[in-house]
Amino acid sequence: MDDMQHQQMGYDRAATMFAPDGHILQVEYAEKTIRLGSASIGIVCKNSVVIVSDRRRKDSLVIEDSANKINEIDEHIIAVAAGISSDARVLVDKARVLAQQHRVTYDSAASTESIVRDIADIKQQFTQYGGARPFGVSMMFAGFDNKPALYTTDITGNYLRYKANVIGEHDERIKRLLKDSYVDDMTSGEGIKLALKIFKEIQGEDFSVERFDVGILSEKGIEKKSGKELE
Image (cartoon, rainbow, N blue to C red):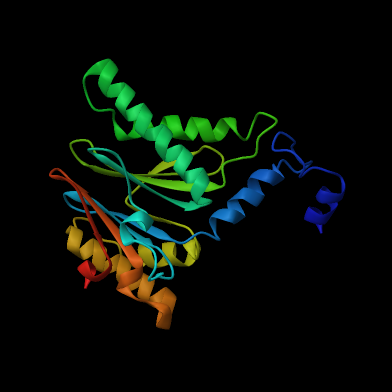
């Protein structure tokens, strides 16, 4: 009822307008977009971080490599997104530029958190200034700066570090399963098995390993697996 009243009064017409109860409705609408996107699970393991991402239905006419959801940001950072994929592409490109600028300026790799913070700052700006809508995407970053780390940014520009997290559809249900099943010091193989086990429980008969992309980030670098490689 409150949402209908807010819409009639025009509080949802701009991302710069607060409703009387303190909500920014355009930002909340964008958050709903994320839950329409395919899910990705990130897990910090003993000496690595793994991200397991659902591509949904497999189209036999699509070249598999072109649909891979795991994006390389730098030699030690990967990212995945849920929501509007074109919005994600813009932010991924920006993150890559930021990482390369840091290398050119300081002759060293940027920390994962500095890249995440800069992307979160950009997302925050689009909730504050007029003439543009918020980015309809949540992003998960895995990095290895002497030790594995996992970060997630939301629509508002907030970011947090996690032991394990999920973005995309069924996120609340998957997060409950992660809380019940996550243990410290898992191997990357155990982390991948856990994520696929959770997806199998959520998806039921629709589950197939061929619809998943996996990114493994460790001291050795980035490794990607997908489809039949996961069997």
